[in-house]
Length: 194
Image 1: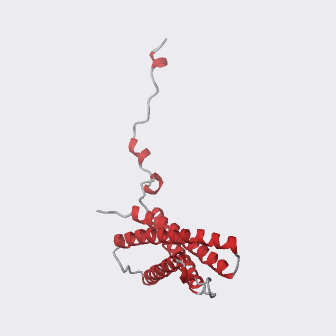
Image 2: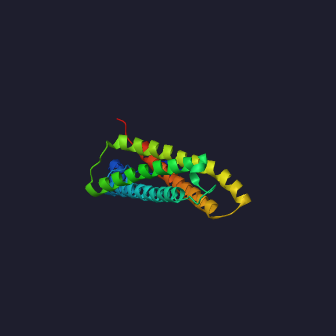
């Protein structure tokens, strides 16, 4: 046996650094143009999605407000004789004003590119406002459901149908604002506090 059989093969030691010099975009460090443009597209999509959801919440809140406010059919068929329906109407009005203000603010920010509020403050107002109004919407709709069900057992008429429609619009507004709160929560969690 010769020494050449037991000698490990020699490695090429010319330039070991050449193997580790991949471009930054390929290494996944987030440096480069592609990750930045992806982030811009994601932020733009989140802004537009939030605007669309708040627009839907505005539409549903407005419909709940209009349907319940016009639900007067005489005698026992007036919404204002029932505390649950008055609560639903009050929250629908509050939600309509909140979502209208948010929609106008987001449209102004998207059209001019200027923020009305500081970015962190805007994220907190969006998140907590969406959470509070969504809770109030589901609370008001939930209080009106049992009353409407009891009335429908005795008589199914235009008053109970209108009440059910207003309650449904309140639930749809809640779903829209709950989804908007998820987006707002994501925006809030990605804020840097340094």
